[in-house]
Image 1: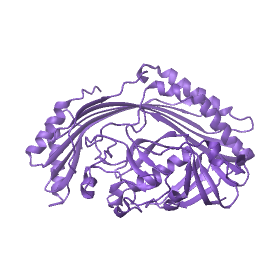
Image 2 (image 1 turned 90 degrees about the vertical axis):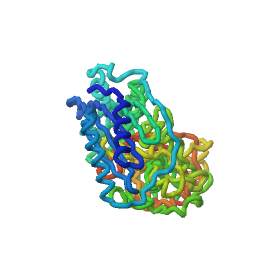
Image 3 (image 1 turned 60 degrees about the horizontal axis):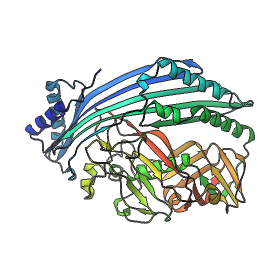
Image 4 (image 1 turned 60 degrees about the vertical axis):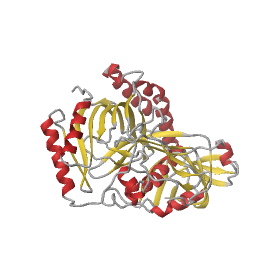
Length: 477
């Protein structure tokens, strides 16, 4: 299905909504074109192809917001019907007190051109890559078996035209490519699982840069070694070092989500949980000066990349925690108005038929200037958790639990031997306060963040350096 990036249609929608009495109106024409290739246990499965296109309209009328959409995007009568539905939805609230923050207007185009277009790569080459990776994981360790293996390669292009009644007009086209692998490792009747994810806002050149053959060999060998060599971890209060995969997850779950302003206000309570954070915590110290957490949509090539959000607000880095102090929350225009601030461009919608809500993009702990060796050199007894398996966090984002995959005993400043399934159970405030050092090894990992009802999954990066926590209680199974 050809998408003409039709500016006239969104401008028509905005004009019609305003003619029907809206105080504010916006329209977003969006097409998501997706192809996925799956190999399961060495057998190629069918190529998945989806085309999702339509127009979503949001209006502010009588102090209430209404949203509606239609997949009959080229039919002006259907667009009018959707706008009338949005107006009716807003009217159902009678007189409300909703407002939107005042923001600058922009006219811009954001087009990311892949260096190597995945469409120019033959389907057989994509399947051959996945089947070769399947062979590599099976040979990762001579003493291990890998009975269940799943590989997925997905390429996506998201094209949008956004316009609002304040003069903003944004046209964008962003490609994304994602690789996922899941496998089961078995040694002497013992089994464990591993999930790997890589994604960027690039073309096929990203796949070449990921060195997937080396990655799969390393991760398969790691899982086997943990099962073969892993010893029981020490139990009690010790120092803990979290690798970038784990510190990035913690940044996403224990900083990003609780700092979403709609959670703080309770709007997400029935949909994805609330937050232990309250507005009065803004400006309060929650950690040491080494802790800075940033959410930045503008990182080039990042999986969560965008330059303008789905309300037309220009994106920028958001310093959620700066040198241990809470400096801002994540806002869309609705929550920003309630807090009396400007939006920081955190409104995202996963598809044309979803309203823009407060979301993360690329959330990470900022690196320092230490080496990893310096980070662990004065640890007498501790655990290094390089990768994680199980993780849990409550609806308030207050209590969390991580179970390590590849984990090492630290003794007298050295990595000694592998340990199995160390468990870190900690509250978010204690997590913040316990971080006393970070190294310079910043790494990012792609993920799909879920939120909302109906659910919205959006691409994000999580990331960070190696992070040291002092005097943490570690449990074992």
